[in-house]
Image (cartoon, rainbow, N blue to C red; front, side, top):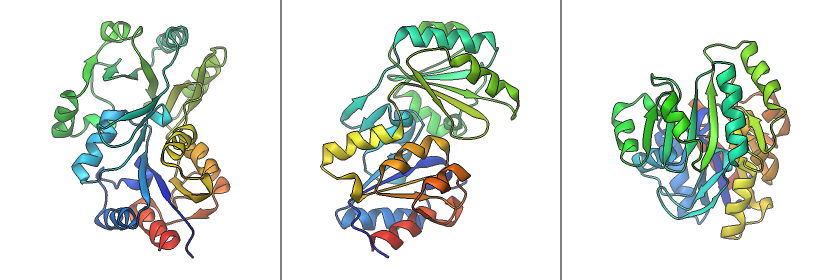
Length: 274
């Protein structure tokens, strides 16, 4: 079955990227085939802008990137920025106080800054030394409490909390965050929380991009697997859940494709676009 798809938006982890953190040959083949046919392909991820951009550069794909869960929209890797949503300073300090009270480590993603509250690497972008070295040429990367305090008055896109295991800490922190105005909380997996400014989500980011390129939502296909993909799955005319998606995404989606490690993105492009 084919649909009149003119814009494709695909999540990164658990969707487009494989277990090694790259894009499979088949997925790349289908992305490039769609681009050659005049369909716009966009990456949509919770990762920070420079991390997302470097992955697409390394994979040889030039496309728009919706990053930090829709807080930032760039027309190409390291290219023109057409949208960003910044957390207000009062909310930043309130979130900081909550996380410090719970003694949880976290990251702060800001405009050309990545700050690690821990003193050891924990984020997925830090696992590959060569990749991290490239990122450090693009962003100011710092660790520790003093470094964290130093960025609180700078433009902040997101707090990213990683838990060592699934336990009550996540629920307790979410409860404590309820009283803070100006934020929204989502997750890209069972062991993290993503604390965003109000109005920043992948659906909003996709809407910004769609309006910029003149594509109606009815002609958009969005693919994802986790709760932070829900807004764009709902926004798109054709929402596609990965075979490995959580139940909430599968229930919202119009269709289900193969899991991420079975080229689900490429299969969906072949099924609905050609």
